[in-house]
Each structure stands twice: as C-alpha cells, then as structure tokens.
Image (cartoon, rainbow, N blue to C red):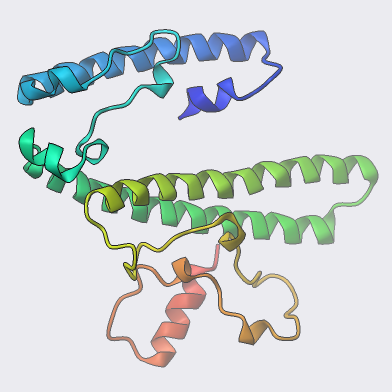
Length: 217
C-alpha cells in the first residue's frame, strides 16, 4: 500500500506529506464504500468490523473471511464468500510471483549493465542507489506473495502445498544469464518459483526451453 510505504519515511518532504494526506482521504472513502457493500450483503458483520481510524486508515482491517476462524466463518455464513476469496488469493499469489520474477530479472539486468558500462565514482553512486531501489522492489513483491499465501493458509491451504511454498528474502535470486557462468552453477538449482506455472506433459527439451524463456527479459 503506497500510503503505508510513505509513512515509513522518517524525514518526509512537504510533497510526501501532502501525498500521504491525499492518499489517506481516498483510502478512507474506499473503505467506507467497502463497508457499505459488506453490510448490505453480510449484515451479520456489523459487530465484527472495527471503526476506521481516520488518522491512519492504512492499518484498517477489511474483515475478509480470512480474518476469521473457520468456526466464525460458519456462524457468520461466510463459507461461500471464503471460497471466492480463496480463488482471488490464488490469482493474487500467482501475480505476486510473476512480479517477483520480473523484479529479479530487472535487478540482474541492471547489475550486469552497471558492471560493464558504469564508470566513475559519481556514476557508480547513482547506479548503486538505483540498484538498491530495484532490490527493494524484489522484497516488496515477495511481501505481496507472503500476504496472499498467509491468507490462503487461513482459508485452508496446506502448509506443504507444492505450488505456494514459503518464500524468504534469501530466495529472491536466479542465475544471471547475462553474466559468465561460475564453477558449480549447474549444481545449484534456481529457487522453486521459477517453475511455478510451468505446463505439464512437456519433454525434457521443452522444459529446458520453457525455463530459459521464462528467465529472459
């Protein structure tokens, strides 16, 4: 959430403070609209949705089915809604993993470009600052995946699910195909998420081609 990210900045500029105020106002309106929809279709949620803090709407809970225990979802009549959320969270998790892969490829490409083409202290400093922002993009995409997976687990996903596995920041990498290969590279497989979404029934040659294409910019 952009508002939450801006509030994490310690020394905010006047422009950033204005953006936070504007973002909070819009977010508050969106949450109010969401509450109206919720109460219209699920009036039983009236007593389970805390009021929105107008000074920090970014911390408000949306009171989705994943926020309740299985027994509470049953008593509140949210089972059908929970199924819908599960399907949406699956899509959200896949989208986040795609964003993770794209962020890693972008970081690797720019790292390789810096090593070959950037010279001089000033240029290197600017490039390093840019690379830090790209590294942060990897973590941000990973955070989105972790939030989606956490909701799926609450909705019934198995901890041992073979598709949506745990993801740690140390896993946010791949072999950089634009850099010279190092000794032992072939023995170290890329992290699991590079093969998520791979079609089934492929030959070994087709799998190799699919994997290579998925890692190219």
